[in-house]
Length: 175
Picture (tube, rainbow, N blue to C red):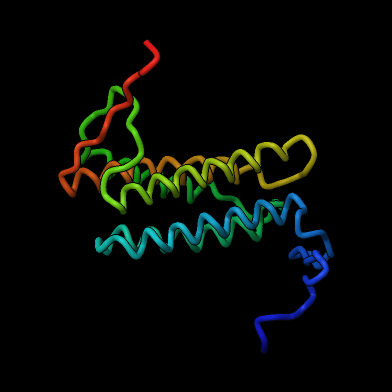
């Protein structure tokens, strides 16, 4: 089978339901941004060696595919996955110093990439929230996206901590 079908050459594609829509359709936009997040996670995976974190990132990649396929229907509940992610966050936080200020994204390459994953995930979350007035969608999708972005924030902190990199705290330049 060829990778090219030529079905999208005129700017249309199909939803999982089979309905033909323009490629700038809101559902296609969200699915595209989920794909972008998944690609950023793939890049992050190439930067880390920790097998536990790698396994969890593979779990998240699969979860994003599940989310993409069920975002606009209610046939899947992500609540148990939220608990799994919260547990992972809690485990990482026990190793980290408490924070009392905002930090700037950065540090080593892997931590900076985790921050990119976090910010892309927040964008996807905003896109889904913007649809709530007009489209029926899986309500647990907002919660899972929020947890995933929290996970990437803590993962970035953990990666920097493990590498002995001190986080740069935000300093107000307007005072």
